[in-house]
Image (cartoon, rainbow, N blue to C red):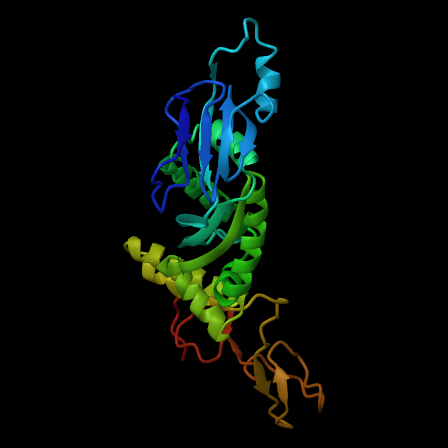
Length: 322
């Protein structure tokens, strides 16, 4: 009886199956069903590929493997060693889910589904079965999930938070096209990829809310977050926290820009009633000399220091003003 090599009753989710006997005799019958291919594999490399049909194994249809075997000492008509890997060419569905980061290092949690099929069986066996030692459907699914998650992390790192969330359809298409090229390199065709869930942390959700509603520009959002963090840090300390916060927070909230000098105090000229800078010795309108009192200052009778005319006590020596 000739040896029969056949993948019987494959499951609907089975991507591949390895024939358990590696001792193959010449003249064996290889049966490949529709939507399947059979790949002869030896020493970590894929050789001859067979499509659907019934095949009698000879040196003619196993030309690549025969070329290898003919270079092996002692080769003859005896059984040869090789693995027969059956590959399903149907479309399969997979799941992915991973954590990624945007350009501003905002954390992302993404998950979804993808659909794929084996496009180049020989390349697939070389890169995944042989290269990753994935000899079962479970091994292949685990590898593809990790492979896709890795590429997803890499691709999403090129986008900022607002782009990922407000242009999700466009982003998913771009990411899919980039990952499609990666899949081709391992012999697969990525037929579809979908984002089914995407989220970030509460901190970045709040930032996203302000940006999406247009209530604040990105720099304003950063300023508000800085205030929030400063307030949290101040809340952790005792004693000087409140006093420090009273000064720090207004400074943070003030938009940065060119420095502006504080406005000078004004006094009223006793002759023409013009508003004159308190540092003036003469009125620029009528030329009247301004006394210290008119300029808003008086001299302390005890220490001689010029102090505001409204002072009840000298801030330098404490003398009471009459």
